[in-house]
Length: 342
Image 1: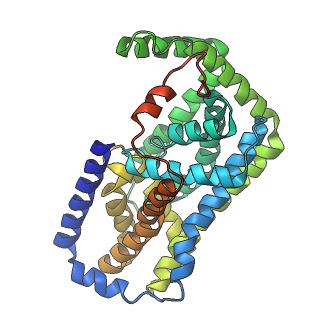
Image 2 (image 1 turned 120 degrees about the horizontal axis):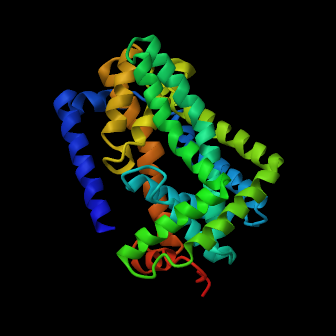
């Protein structure tokens, strides 16, 4: 965990140096101080309202696998999971196992069952994001920023993991082959560590099949996922509007679509530097000046990224949840018949 925080601080320093060299903090502060105060309470509340909406989505997915959990509990671990997602180099991969572990322990279900729900949640998230990514990349191709070959290469890379993962889950033999391979790989790290993984993966597949039968709940989850994206677009729109810059909802959708791609680059925590530079570049294409564009993106990142991290850490401390999870991490990666309840 110390290494992650060191990497996070290093990312902040790199970003600060770039901003000072390109623009200067004085120019940024002058623009930020022009923000309309009437927008501030709504802008600050929107990331947490979006997270609350997400909690209902995850609850529906859990329900599709016959797992009952209160929205308040789901929200708690969604917020804590978001913190870990944001401080690890690749978004959404740091906090998912941790929030699965914590929720499973709280509602007294096997971690494998909750992880199954997160796998389905990832599919729903992907489907709610892909239209935004398609729209953004297609728009950039119309600006002659991306040629068609690059566009299709990007979309292929985005779709490939989902296609491969879907086939492995669908085909029982492919799942057994993949799980045995992973078991051998893990065993090389520590003998016996991956024991029982194939059996766990078969149960995982059964949970996914059970969830797919509840098309009503999955349809609600997908609708909620799209609503989350619209809320994010609206938040970014309000931020720029509060600064006196009207780029329209369409422009905000393009910016967020590119930000999603940039945030998936596993270089620095939360896609820092890459996210900011790519979205500012897109705003420049849309005709927004460098200083207003940078100010708007920094405010967006503050409310959607830094504020969530700060509130999430305070929330975790309030509930007595430590961010030193070495012991819990060891328990989590004990595959096989061992339950987190033991």
